[in-house]
Figure 1 (cartoon, helix red, strand yellow):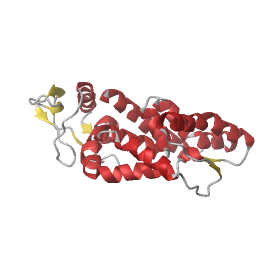
Figure 2 (cartoon, helix red, strand yellow; figure 1 turned 90 degrees about the vertical axis):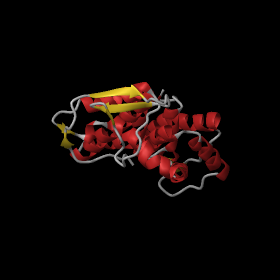
Figure 3 (tube, helix red, strand yellow; figure 1 turned 135 degrees about the vertical axis):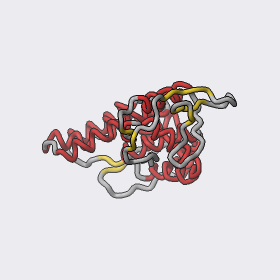
Length: 240
């Protein structure tokens, strides 16, 4: 869902900086003293100084060409304003829907080594979800869909709805990259960090590569997912 220019553009500014908004309501990123707007030309008012300064540093680090792919924190913050805020109910519904098909709920029927790895990494997160969040999701073997309890999904929706637009953007990134809203919520609640989220999300793929060898496509996918999860983890730190 990240929303930003996808193509590089010529650098059109000399200096990037951050400053408090005159209203005192937040912080702005400035390029040669002019406030940055989102890709959709919306007001880019940020909730924290450290977030604004990190985004300003992303702009400042650009060379002759501005490469949006090297500005993940800018992309996440802009997504919160341009994509999540105007479509908040849809985002909440999408994330709640992950509870019906969460990665952690679908276990391998074999081999035993993979079964044990999944139980060791995934079950503690489902236990935490049940005990701390009141969201008890059922587990099955294989890929056949399992029906989740309606009460659990309503509780899940309550937790998803509790985040403001900036945090909801982080949850969306964590969930869609990992395939698990429970992994996403665990990071949001500081049960695990982004690196551990990556390890949980890529458990099956890592096992397959151990057994059958690596290929370029799988490595690229793994590296891309790790970068996205770690960037989202950093974004959360900056939100405070």
